[in-house]
Length: 333
Image (cartoon, rainbow, N blue to C red):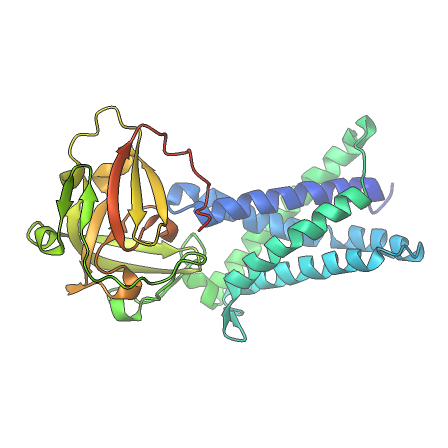
């Protein structure tokens, strides 16, 4: 019995593991409630599965290098990217590599993973492996089961060691985020999605259907709610947000299927109408008006959803017949 699987089985298993890593990675960024914890765990487990496949893949790499293909250097670039992504992921999750040269480690992890995609696609085309029925043998199934069991065991052991050692990673939220600035709004990072920028707002009014509201109109109807903001850049903060419940502003939803929330910058997100009762249009945090970086004059508070749903500089609330899922999974601007 061979100690290591064949090159084709190794490559197909590695491809499956990479697909799981990317799928769970996207899910981990989107997940904001405890129900999505399994996605984050799956992402970590899939990362460990990649590590367990390294010995078998090294044998494949050595054989490939002996063939002296011109494109072997691109394959080595792919391997280097993959190693860097894994190191950054494990470093950030344990808390020992939070930043690199002042850049957030999680963002580097995500950026390198995205940069890896085109190289990986090229590799799949250049080194195409056609699956065969014989690949689904009992031996392959047994090895796959052992690998999955080993990955789960290593994941559990690593999490236990991090917890027992009191490593920084033990203080992460289930999403992987670290606490920053809870109940201290001035210490909360001013994170902005992609290329959005802080606008200069002079005269502001909120448009809700045919109605229009000034900031003073909203101030007279303000209530306070405690909510946790969990940003996709790897931090979270709990704050006391003051503002007007969105339900009070839009009234009955009728036949609408989504609520469109648009920023003065053009950034927009659609919510299911079932979320309306949980949404708050905040105009203050911690008893003080919002700062420009945190969405002045008004921002959305969306408990249970990640930071990119918490639209800043809101100027329009609009009920729509369009379903909420008729949008990119992540805003593109």
